[in-house]
Structure formats: C-alpha cells, structure tokens
Image 1: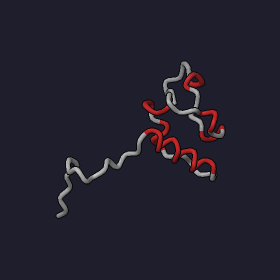
Image 2: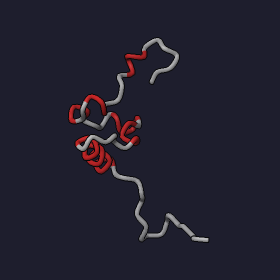
Image 3: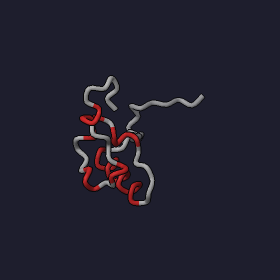
Image 4: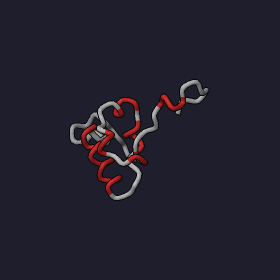
Length: 72
C-alpha cells in the first residue's frame, strides 16, 4: 500500500491557484473546449472577468431563475 502524507514538505498542493484556474479556463475556451468546472464555483465566480469568455462558457444569470424552485 502506498503511504500518502499531505504534510510532507516536498509535496505540492494539487489544487490550482485561482490565477492558474482562470488561465487554464481561458486556454480551454480559446480552443473550443469547456472550462474546468471549478471555475463556476461560488468562491471563484466573483473574481473572474467573464467578459473575456465567450457567451457559451459564461455562468447562467441567477436572476433568470427568480421565483423558480430550482435556481440554477
């Protein structure tokens, strides 16, 4: 069995920094691919300049679901 210890000093956190995540998402959409799903998480959405993304890659407007039992 492989032992895995996140506290080891030589192991990097596998999660991307926010800047890297945005850069990767832009790279993907420029080539016609879907961006990584993490870009749509609430903690990142407010830091992304969505004007740089094509319409199809932008998150839906939550106000479009106003009054519905399901809000996106």
